[in-house]
Length: 419
Image 1 (cartoon, rainbow, N blue to C red):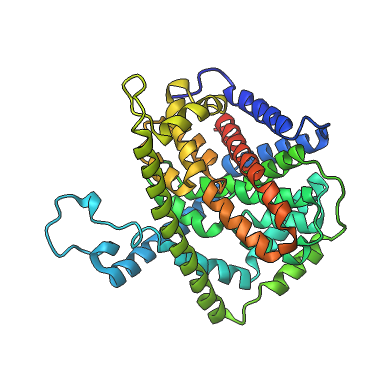
Image 2 (image 1 turned 90 degrees about the vertical axis):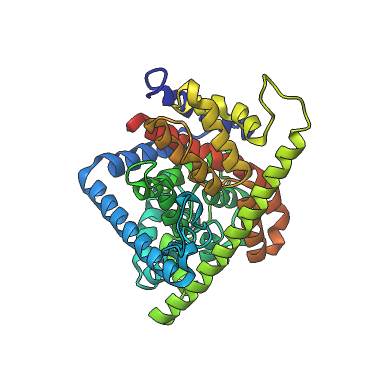
């Protein structure tokens, strides 16, 4: 099922730009920044989704992540037995209930974390990040450390990326800090890309390609919208080369084995954090629904948290290209992602009654860390790196969820127009 009207996503792009302008206090805007942001998003989307050689690279990455998932399944079955995907010791009547999320899907984070550490040690990731950061710096007139931090968000998380440039966090302007925070909210870490691709296998074709492309496209969207909401007043003179050198000095591994062991430890922390967050936020959502159940039903339907956000987000979902009859379902997914997290939203997307085109748009719209739980993690990390800027970080944090959400929804609109 396609959009209700031709080029429906264009309305979404215009609406998102207007929302960013309103949230920024209707300040005078730089058309150069807007042109650079939209131009890079369309360019990256066309190259990665339509040009043969780039598509082949993405297909190769999909094959690699499939091999990684199979390797993880072998390991979890060996370590955890049937709850980790191994053969059951009894006759199974409900195969869908035998697996355990914590022991089957989530352990892929461990291998991804190790691979990320090895690729950094082998200087593969620094080279790619350096190339992206130069493009972003030239396009938006950013300083080297902000360009590097923004590019690093495509591959690292919202805490790991600031960690790479923590030496510069103390001297960044508020506008530069807001750009970095928005990029953290609008992208996902490389360590969870494989996990989300696992969840979306069978839901959309080549899921890893779409997850990776989503982070790439959302980076310039995040910078553009952050600069619209809080224009740059001044820019530091640090070069990309200096920022890259400082990052490689700060994140250093003493050989392959050190990268493997530290990557395993970091992956374990992330896995435990995700499991604990899932338990807490799913429980809180269920508790909120219990409270809302005390209210009278509306049109025969019980009031739920998902239902409320379905209504709130439905108009925006229609604007980015979702048919109106599916907009409420898409709005529920967006609400789940914002209040809970994107992991639960992707789980719900598996069974959502959406058309193939809408599933692809929602994959991009949901692919970001802009939610309350991730915001808390980002605040804790940034305050740890530069405690003297605690008040500024706390003041900018709520708006970063808004800018991050607008960035991913704009990415969804653009991809919906291209595919």
